[in-house]
Length: 189
Image: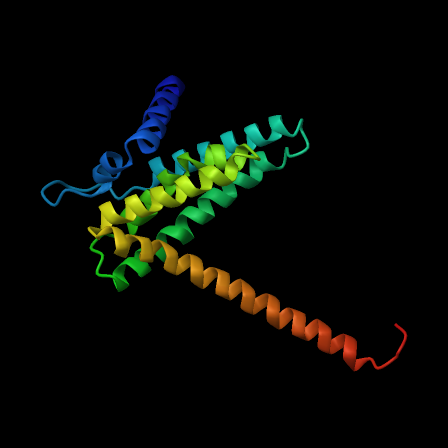
């Protein structure tokens, strides 16, 4: 495949996700009369490219201090795409969603278009993170045929469960460390 054509396809998809997300996500829904392409290669290419671009922007803005981000961000984005897509798929099934897991993974992967800016630009990143959250809601609504409220809950459910899991793990770790400190009763290490 031609590199120029690959970049043009990437930029076209990136622009469409940012500007017209509902139209873009409707294209991800497989047509029941046509043979569907469940290949994840295009979305993985898109996600890895977003991660690399994010890492390059971060490295440039930190004057080379964050060069590790060029390798770390694509790995984070790909794992987040697969895990996030699976989590949103399961949550959507609780709310009666009709989409497939492949479509959910693709949708999450394409929402990383905004991550190029949210991970790359330090100060504005948190504002772009809200837009990323909104893209997840719009994508979930479109690909799972849900209303706005259900799509919001589908996106919030895995996020809340993740935060609760992190809190539980840190609480248990903290209690264990505190118990170890108290159990020494004046012993010098």
